Length: 447
Image (tube, rainbow, N blue to C red; front, side, top):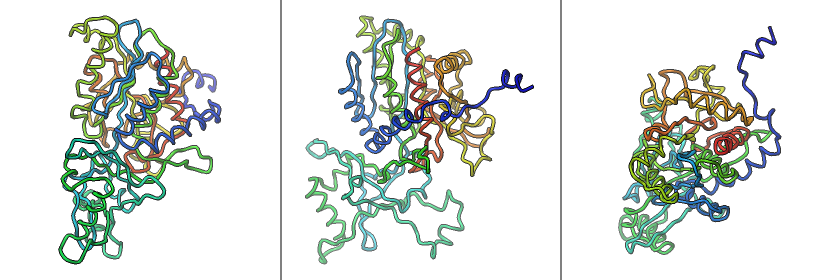
């Protein structure tokens, strides 16, 4: 009976028992450093540009509006092996007219971005990251709150002594008003002569420090991100907690896998896009023409005329890992998962055949032939992997960029590590799964 079970049953492997711990910890250290300097899509593109300049040989780089980046290593055969991630994360942005004064406090109006739980952003230290296009069209990039001697910023919560009617007795979804997610930025008045003196003092500081005026906020993209650093979690330091792991964990592992892989018969592409967290809309998203433009440049580099027919043929002969995370089983909330089709921490990279919600609505449902091919690649390269859906049927759901890539007639499947507390300011990943994701992407590039 035991032998028959071992022969027929699929058993989940624990990554820690399949790899050398030293390799896993070494890989994770550099990833933590990456998380701490890449908290926005623009900062991630800048990181990739610098990494490319230090490691590239014959590879190519394409950048779209400082929010998308593609790395390309051209191969002889038609089509490509594409690993596509997104580099935006749930966050809170400033409104275009942010600054106001109320109750002796200067504050910024905000507008949240993506699927956040609003209460998680109250009374935590926040940093300002952004870019301002000034009236003379010069660009000012900055972040305030990350250095030890920087001030931080806070969205204040209500004290429990007075929150019974306003917050506590309401459903969570209604208890936290988005228009009350205002950021404290100062409290000293400039003088006692007129109203808005605290606002005036803040604008004076900003003008003296950065040379900006109130109107400059209108042509700015300024984001609030957690000011704390990514950290090891647990006595054994086996986990990582940090902001933006959805989906920069996949961006980092695909970047490393790309440069650690040798040239293959097909072209190899790493693609990092923006706006996934709000539906992949706009000219920096997976639905933009950027991938088309990259393919056109690839064909031109191969001395192939970029006709519609040749572009379509290139897509048809391509395969993609949509590099995105899944939701790991949280021991305190196991009831939202169906245990046999859920993903678990330390069981390796997750193959997600389909996403969407309900009856697989709005999903890319990968073809069985392609799933089988990826499964074989991983098994042949000793990659520890698992499969998982995002929760029980009708429990909720979610989407990735997979369906937009697949719409080009590219074979596509979601593939990435599982996270606990996804979309929170302090998401949790496994160092073992991080390393296995890197191995999976490298195997895909190298087969």
